[in-house]
Structures are given as structure tokens and as C-alpha cells.
Length: 531
Image: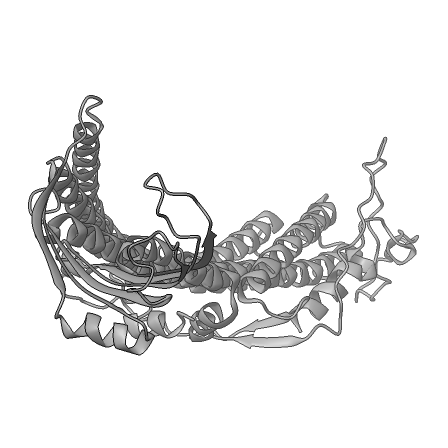
């Protein structure tokens, strides 16, 4: 309906940029003096000659059959969370840190390795009694796992299947079978004791990655709330533009009525010189203002359609409450529970965890190593496996391992770098707390100020309308000058525009205040749109 009205206004003959034939001046006979004045045809004001007129502009094209959409303020939040690009972008950004955690946890994956191959050898032996030919099928399987306790465990199985052709000169020519199978099962245990002592560095790295991911989830909720706030700003901005356009069209109607009144009085000889030209010029000014406000509304409406992913060229009807409710009295909010502070706190803790991890990595690597093996060699593979698992032929090993690299000082610089990053995160956290507290106070003050301005603007609009009606009646009765009517009408238009803007600014301030307190959307809603 609004776009249809705008299209009609922008394309109506009386609203065209160029003067139409219907608005050309016509000759009017001089009024005859008599005892009773007789009505005469309404005179037309003569056009003022112009030199080098400005180029004409085309009217704004508007589709009359645009789809109609009724929007409430509550609908904006749902539309933003469900279908806007901003919400999708926030959800996708929150998924990015997941890979960082996976990269850290990759070091603790189960690592399976298997090899198998066939070997055929006719090598000679330096002793001169080597085998004529050896055929060996070699296979080995190992499963290794690192744990966050600084422990590394490994299970292994090695099998060698031999088929040999012995030399007659060999002492084993008649004593050993030509086919044998050897199986070796082993278990290795390694425990870090100095660098990454009992996994302290590993756990710090995992903890830092988890906190980074949690910070991203909290930031995601903050981004969704910012997207909803952006949608509400666009909603109220479009509403203000629509109301300005309506007031512009209403001002045109009022000035057209005033022009008709002045023409009628001029025809009767009761108007002062220049009155008709003055009000006609004001009418033309209002027409141009209406074109500007109409184009502004279309721009803001298109912006709202883009944010909410509404049908293109949608004709939006705003459902706005008539009451101006005062801002609520709310208790102080705990800064540590706000999303942006929580997110920064997690980033600070993650940076500190990385410092502790780096400090542990500065030490030399010193670890305890223990190994146990079981072996079996038999003609039959099943007997070989049984002998190896029985533990009848074990092998044990215990020892320590020491590793240390030095010279470049890179690990020390890594620690210094991470300490600097941790200090930066702490500074950001303290600054964010101060800024957040100041913004909360400012938002509350701004909201209460704008509420008072909105109430005052409504009262001013009502008083301006009353003043215009009284001055207009006085002018019709010949008791005042046309300048007072024009001034009253212009002030009424300005008051109506000011009220629309004050109402929109107050609603935007309310939404901003709620967003600052993390009350614009609850955590349940932000988690619900995660995937």
C-alpha cells in the first residue's frame, strides 16, 4: 500500500517534475464589483520565466503489485536468526576454531603401522657355509598411542617366515627344518619426567585449544546478537523513512488545500499581493521534498529486505505500538557474565595456558623407558605364536632417555613471545571491562534521554497541530497574515518528522541497551541456531 501510494504520488500529474498541460495558467476575468460577490473561476498563478532550466529527473519506478509483508519488531529477531546472511556467517565463523583443537588432539591419535614384504636371497657368506637360498616373508604391525599424562605406549608384533635351502657344508644341514616361523610380541612404555613432565605441557596445549573454541562459541552468540541489533536498526530506520514520506505527502495535501483557499480568496479580491505565489512556491518545495523522502524510504526498505532476506520489492507494513513505554528500571549486570567479557576471559586464560606449556618445553627431554618382549620360533606358525605369547622366552629392558637442543635460544624466545601475548590479552580484558561498564551506563542514560525527547516530541506535534488549526481558521476569517499560516504549517511538518525520528531513535536505544546487557537474544536462542 505504501509503495503504491508512493508510486501514485511520484507519477501523478500534479507531482511531476515538469509542468503539465493541466497546470498551465489560464486567463481569468477581473472580478466584478457588486453588492454580493459572485464566485469566479479559480485563477491560476502565472509561471515564473526561467533561464536554462535544470535537467528533468525521471520518477522513481515502483511496482504496484509488490508482495505485502507485515513486520513487527519481534519478527525481526526471528528472521535474522533463521534466514539472514549475518546469522549464517556467524555460525560458520564459530566452526573455524574446531580444526585448531583437532590439530592439537591429533598428537594423541592412535597410530597404526603395518609392513609386509617378501625377500629372496642367494647372498654368499664370508664364513663360506651360508645357505644356498633364503626365502623370507616379513610382516610387522605396531600400534602406538600418546597420552596426555606424558606417556607413550606401543604394542608391536613381528613375524618372519623362513624357507631355507641349506648348504651341505653347513652344520645345520641335517638339524634344522627348511621352514620356520618366528613371532615377536613387544610392549614399550615411555614416561616423560622433565620436559612435558607427566604431560603438563600437553594438557596446557589441549586446554588452550578448548578455551579458544569455547571463546569462538561465545563470540558467535555475540555476533548473532549484533546481527539482530543491525536488523532492528534497519527496521526502525526504514520505519522513520516511511513516516517521513507519509508526512511529506500529507504536507503536499495540506499545501494544496491552502493554495485552493488562497486562490479562492484571491478570486474574491481578499488576498494580499504575493500570497498565492508564496504558497505555490511552498507547495513545489514540499513536492520536491516528498520525492527525496520517497527515494530515501525505498533505499532503507531495500536495505531491510536485504538483511531479512524478504521477497524483492516487498511492500512492508510496520506494526508499531502507539504507546511510548518508559524504559525499565533494571539491576546492575555482572560484567563477568557478559558474552564479550567471557570471550575475552577465555582468550586470556588460553594465552596463560600456552605460557605454562612453553615454560615446560624449555627443559631438556628426560624420560623413563621400559620394554618387554616375548619370542617364539617353530615350524608351525600357530606354535610360534603360542610360544611368544606364553612368555617362556622373554626379554626385558629398562633405561632412561635424554635429549636436549641448544644454541639458537628459540625455545626461550617462544616463552617470551607467549608471555607478551598473555599480557596483551590481560590488557584487553581490563580495557574491555571498563569500556563495557561505561557503555552500559551511557546506554541507559541515552535511552532515558531519548524517551524524554520522544514524549516531548509527541507533545510538540500535538501543540503544533492545534496551533496550525487555529491560525488556519484565523486566516480564513481574515484575521491573520498568510506568513503565519505557512510558518505554522512548516513547523507542524517539522514536528511530525521529529516525532517519528525521536520514536525510532528511542526504540533503537532500547534495543542497544538490551544488547549491551546480553538480553536482546538469550543464550538458548543463540545456541539453537548453531547448525
